[in-house]
Amino acid sequence: MKRKNKPTSIIIAGGGSGGHLFPGIAIAQELEAQLDSSIIYFIGSRYGIESRVFPTLKYRCFLLPISGLYKVGAIRKLLGLLRFAYSVVYTFFLTLYIRPHVVIGVGGYASGAAMLCGLLLRRNLVIQEQNASPGMTNRFLGKYAKLAFVPFSGMEKFFPNPVVVGNPIRKEILQVKAYTPQDKVNLLIVGGSQGCHAINMACIEALPILADLADQIRIIHQSGYRDYEILQDAYAKYPKLEAQVFPFAENMAELYSQSHLLLCRSGSIIHEIIVAGRGMLLVPFPNASGNHQLRNAEYIVEKQAGILLEQDEQLGEKLIQVLQRLLQNTNEIEEMAKQAKSLAKTDATKEISETILSFYKLK
Image (tube, rainbow, N blue to C red; front, side):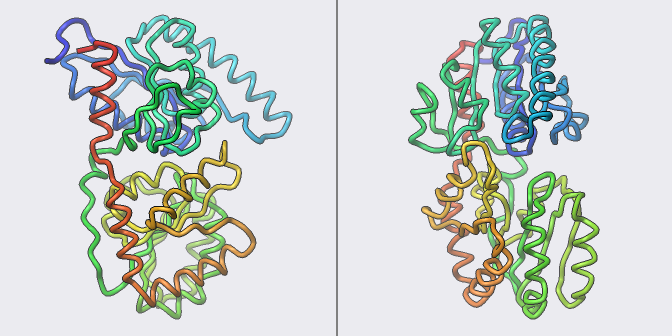
């Protein structure tokens, strides 16, 4: 039975990357569907992907001048601390005004400010963690949240009562077409919303060899804006190699549907790829907070759904060797896709929403 009294106010805070933001959007969509009357607010950083995504959302959105503190220089750290202090004060009064029934943190520094204010104002706190090892924000605030939703088992050392549900997935990703073998292997390269310079440069190094395999492979490459022109020029030198390159993709579901194999980082994008049922070549970001990307990649490799490629000076050479092997045995690509699909938990968003509403008696 849906709640029929005054609107349920919910703050969803976090972002910086799509890996933090998009699970929050999925949760918002499901909560809205389950409640008769709700007002959902998003809080993010003006320096993250949410600065581009928020204007497309129908929810009430606020951007904070908050920036990272992890592994930055002394001046940037001082500036980051000042921004954080201002953001906490701003968010405190915003939270006081909204008086949310629940504050949901999905990771990132904006999540830290909102969750801290929620704690100070005695709001109900919920954490949604996407990785095998939490980042700084969720690691610090985890012990104060009565509900923490996690993707994998074994995270009790971070959260008092973790609920293993997988990861929230947007509805369009759930509708990705099943893996279908074709005449060529479609390799989708995604370095995150900002692109990945290390992956981009490794691909340029691999192009002369891949061009010799043009009858076996097709490339779809999201480059990010920084390396877009460099990659365009690089691919143009090999006209026989069928390739699309673009700086940013709005419709990831369509790209997953077109792909057979992904080359990407190993942040929370792995959960979307699992649901899509595709094999992965994973290059963990070596400076990720808590080394969570390596932990994620190790989990995928253990489940035989992907291959780990460490980021170093030999990345391009290793990429060539792996792709040559896989193109000689495409059954391995298909098997990784099957293993990935077997890990999929497609009801995480619904389970998270129902648990929140039931636990805090909001319906």
